[in-house]
Length: 178
Image (tube, rainbow, N blue to C red; front, side, top):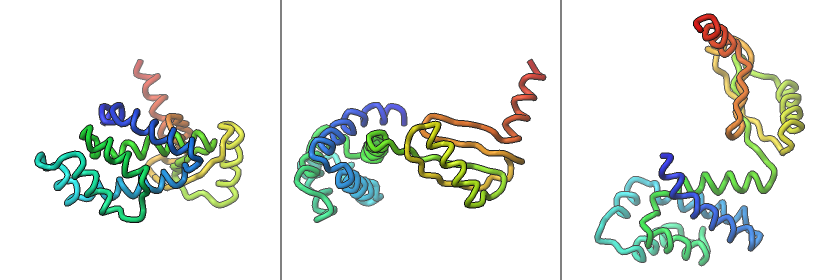
């Protein structure tokens, strides 16, 4: 997985630069998601893995399956990916592109895991505090995990804040064992 991300990074950056230059970030994100959905379909992935297909044939197949959902620039991008045997990296390319887009838009997705469901007022208060701390627009998604016992765990990109009771008990246990 890590190696795929490393290989996909230059392609994601290139797509991002083209999209940013043309002022078309949202359109490119949409097209990349469509292509990734098509390429990861099991029958398509199996077909594309055939060694008898040239890169041009692979790109043409994906482009025809995507239809009007993609434009000529994306077809050229598909050709480059197919020529380099990188179509299978589309999920990683999409993920990296989305991260670059979020950074550009000063937006961050935050996952909140709590022991109990949060009410709307608590979510709004948390969202405002995170917006101030991270200096970005915050999009919250929350879920309940009763094994936390109490408190919250926040995940935003590579930032993790563990304010759960379970996390505190684990830290206490580690301190006592050392």
